[in-house]
Amino acid sequence: MNINRKVQTLDEFTIQQMRDFPAATGQLASLFRDMGLAAKRVNVEVNKAGLVDILGDAGSVNVQGEDVKKLDVYANNQFIGVLRHGISCAGVGSEENDDIVVFDDEISNKSKYVLLMDPLDGSGNIDVNVSIGTIFSIYKRVSELGKPCTIDDFLQPGNKQVAAGYIIYGSSTMLVYATSRGVNGFTLDQAIGEYTLSHPDIRCPDSGKIYSVNHGNFFRYMEGVRKYINICQQKQKSEGGPYTQRYIGSMVADVHRNLIKGGIFMYPGTIDKPKGKLRLLYECNPLAFIVEVAGGKATNGQQRILDVKPTELHQRSPLFIGSSSMMKELETYI
Ligand code: AHM
Image (cartoon, rainbow, N blue to C red; front, side):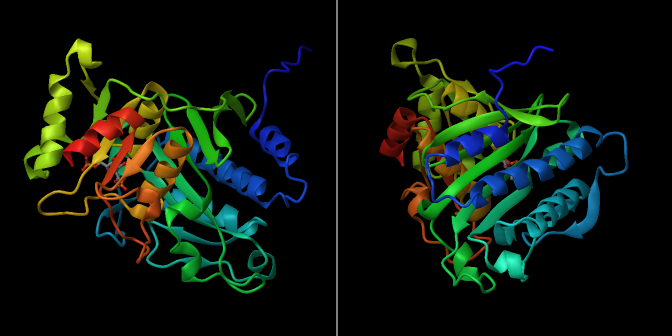
């Protein structure tokens, strides 16, 4: 039997990374494995969503006042269940839960990390077979080890993230994660049930031709944002244009594409909703961390996303994120 030595699994990769840190306890690597495991289960359900009765609303409304889809509930339960039984996570903050979930048991209380997540982002796309994703963010606890974690562990600014990642359930399923050392992407090989390193050391191109924004809100955006969108539409070849508008409505997929190809994603505030739609802790911070490690930039229009000190778990934030030189141009308008 031929063994392809070029294939490296997620576990092999994280173990190899750990070798550079003799003091590492393996807790972070085990968190990635837990997230990958739960995502495999979610992936199975996503793939058969059209076949079984898990489409449509679960009949309840989440803490943001939005309809909760059945797959959201399933994904939330899977991730929390796997993390609760793992050895590295003291508690979880989830877009789907009002409050933090504290795993108050002996092993969890000794765990170094807490995790924040949007278990199923882009849920409006579930029913129509469009890519959706999971986004997560990992922090070292600031509360005392050996005791249950507290809300302070979760309300840390994004610049304190130890790692962040996402899983895309798309034409293939991918897990991408970043630590301060780099961003790496793993594609799920369904035949062997393993994530294999397919996108090593992802770098966000300095510039690109894609801009992603919900044009339907155009007249509710602030003047500076409208001006920048007009600039995107008018780009000449000599200025790196013409630009292309791409907007899936699943942020993970939109940001992933722009990360690989170069581009800018915007979810600005509007006149009626100045803070926009996206959640700082579950969506903006993890993606800002990943894109910055890859060489890009992310702001809320006024300051670097990662420097915002959160005041509440479910707070929203405008988001502008992407290739560094496109972001610099945007900043001259906003
Ligand atoms: P969700 O948490 O209900 O899935 O909403 C988040 C999603 C993002 O993935 C996406 O960028 C955005 O909502 C799209 O919103 P809109 O339809 O307003 O453009």
